[in-house]
Figure 1 (tube, each protein chain N blue to C red):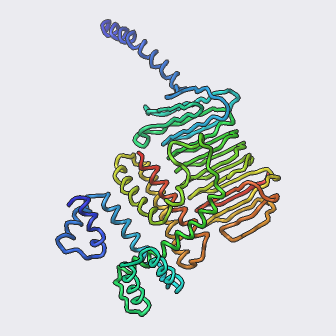
Figure 2: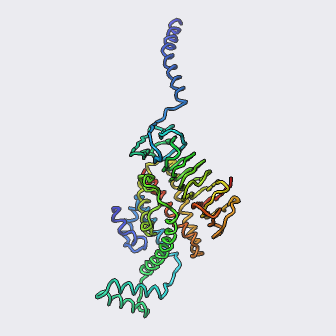
Figure 3: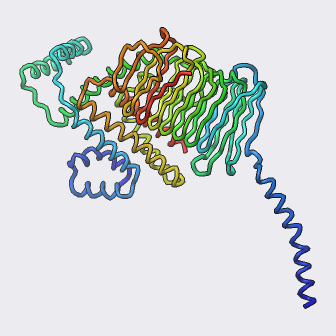
Length: 243
Length: 228
């Protein structure tokens, strides 16, 4: 009996450090360290290209003269980058054989961004530079955007735009399977070219001067016209909102 | 039988013109080669598409222009052949086999589509300004230039990409494969719907424009997946 008690005591002593280590590891696991985290100092009007494969991409803006790219929550993926002056490119290798890699990006508002992604949601907030999104699956959200031009193409996913037309355009939003939802200030002048193959087009009360109006195609100008706003939805609605 | 040999006789195989022994070899090869199956499916789709095209009789003006082109480009020895061909055409003594008629009809259709597309693309180019040089990605994300977007080029490129993707698909995880198949199916259904709508109303320019754009989207989808 005494031998048994000593054996238990020894076992407890041996296990205590291991349990403590496991406990510490567990607490640090709640906030995983980014798999890739780099800061790139930039001057005005930089350009950023992100080529992700499977995962979300979240872009926000800051007042700092730097671009921060962090890949979080991902498995052991390979991320590479290339810097040429004010132009930065970051991409994921071997993406479809591994799990998701979520990008979190902070950059100056005037940075132009080029995003390519196969699967995953994309959100872009507060950008004033050109925006180009080439996505296959996943919703795309552009909020508080004042870009001089926007080009978003998605095969399967909704596109949500809430911002201003900050330049001569064009502003092209296209989804093969999903809604295209656009919110603009009521006074925005623009030329609309909307194509919805299966669903309807809702003009949200914008008073248009139509040059052509069919069930699936509408062309017209608002406030005497302005930058071109091309909206295309193959299997989804086109919805305009005034604010 | 190798892939090269199989593809050399693919058209004859689809037309049922192969000898029984060769046909059996092709079928054996197809049973175990996904890439060649993809090529076969594409050709069958194109043949089916071509056979369902409405027949349009070219006007006299077109024939006159063809004759004029032939005369201006190939004077001399070739001229007499062209003149002979023209005489046979105008006198109705020219007989064409089914494949020749099919090729001719397809060509007319493709020319019409290309012309319509270039017209649309021209107006689109006017509206789509190129991004600044520094804004261009390493890969070209913008639409292909007009001279690369002829429908036959698109179909050929689609076939190549599909073959490439079929070879790589087995390495993907099942979730990705399912997603890819779903997207391809969706675009193909959209293309089929546009095609039917165009058959009902060949003057539906919006539908034609959207169909060609859907072809580009399929190309973008296949390109997106073919890198991995």
